[in-house]
Image (cartoon, rainbow, N blue to C red; front, side, top):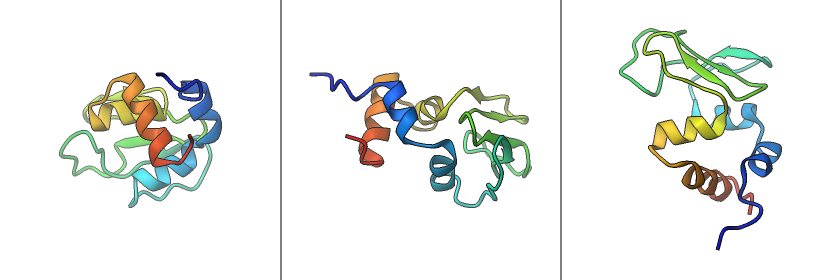
Length: 99
């Protein structure tokens, strides 16, 4: 049965993009709200630091080298781990102890 708490709004309200990206992008110097240098892009063999950017307010991300773009941390998890939407919600909830 689908857990009522397992929905996008619940996850986004309880997991800040800054905490999430600090955990996922260990070598990135994430310091300010809005757009930050996310380090090397996790979606391709990147050797151009600075091409991958993350927004620590909204969770959006974009690579200016490979062109991948997403609107929030759920989209990031879906893309990085090859998950469907509900699977990404479950992974976030489980990994971060949200349910």
